[in-house]
Amino acid sequence: MQPTAEHRDRVVEQLSHGFATERFEVDELERRLALVEAAETPAALDALVLDLTPTALATQSTALVPAKKMRVIFGSVEKTGAWTVPPHLRARVFFGNLELDLRDAQLSAVTTIEVNVVMGNVEVLVPPGVAVELDADPTLGSVEDETNPGVVTKLVRIIGSVTLGSVEVETLQRGETRRDARDRRRWDRRQARWERRRERWHGRQRP
Image 1: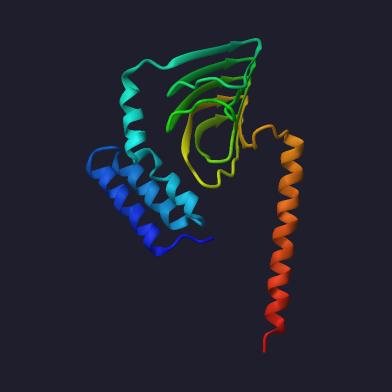
Image 2: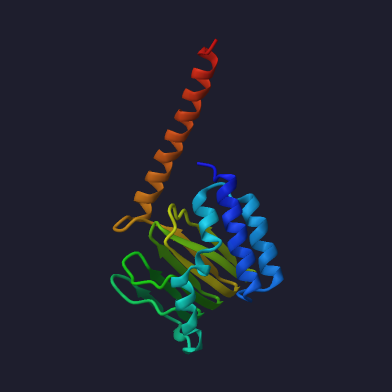
């Protein structure tokens, strides 16, 4: 469903107020305004101002608390199940693998994951409802965002750098395997194609 003009206007007003109250600089304002114009769903619009809600601003007040650090060196670490994700997590991965499964985790309204990956891999799994802003700079590496948040309730920011490694973020439903997700997406694509064909057929039948 395409967002309405009124919805876009409300988001622009929130962004303007955020800039006026020094929540971000002019470059960030321009970036978000461009995304307002490009947004194709109401959820994509809401994600642009999720960090400006009262709950998110209260969460950001904890920024003075030092980030929790996680190091993976020549090894593999998996964080799964019910765990509490700190508002700011700093992860360094050197010749290793780190998997952060956030589907059953307790998240703040806005969570920042700062990664420094060298010859390693970081994989983040998020449930529906969690939007992701992925802004990690790759150097001879890869950064992949395969998220589809739907109705957004929380935001995860992933920033940092990737050298000769990878960062992958994917939306999976709770209890869903990657194979299940591939099958579900394949089915959704088939359903979407069928709906488009049905609409074209009905369009031809109209006088």
